[in-house]
Length: 84
Image (tube, rainbow, N blue to C red; front, side, top):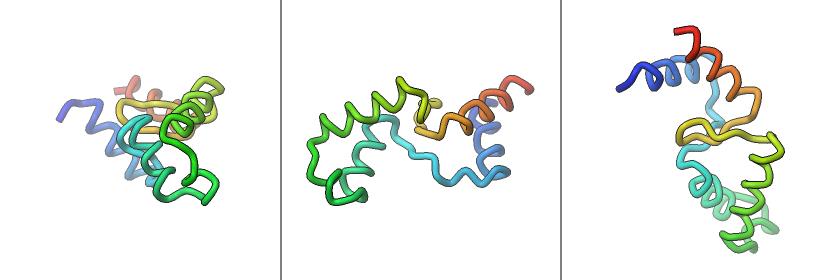
């Protein structure tokens, strides 16, 4: 395990960031497809993927390695990695 991975796990445990979604954009789309509201469940994977990409472009969420996290959490993760 690399130093950044160890820092990420440490920070996630310390900050209780259990809401990060693993698997990147595709993992996030799958989660929304199977656990989202009925409106989202009825959308195609391509449409859900496009919504996620729009959220990323508008900095609503961020992509950190293979996780999708809230933008604020991502900046905290990057700051913690840069300190080490």
